[in-house]
Length: 80
Image 1 (cartoon, helix red, strand yellow):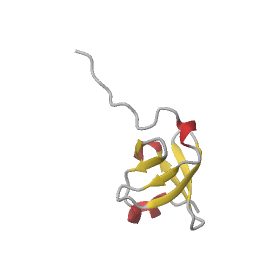
Image 2 (cartoon, one colour):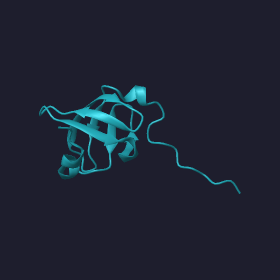
Image 3 (tube, helix red, strand yellow):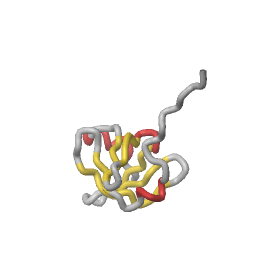
Image 4 (tube, one colour):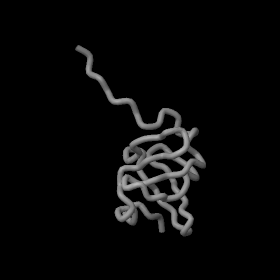
């Protein structure tokens, strides 16, 4: 019997550039400005930047990217 692997939350990372991001508790975080091999870079309207591991992305519905951490947990991903 073959082992099944879950499908990744995002199949084409280029398609999420400039899409909005919401945390697990539904709070708006900002938009994706860039990505690299391991993470996405999110710019917030509060002039904050976050580097979030791609492993924390839980879904993409075509317009909104969902991440696993709640809003109060986002300080650990803050850049600078």
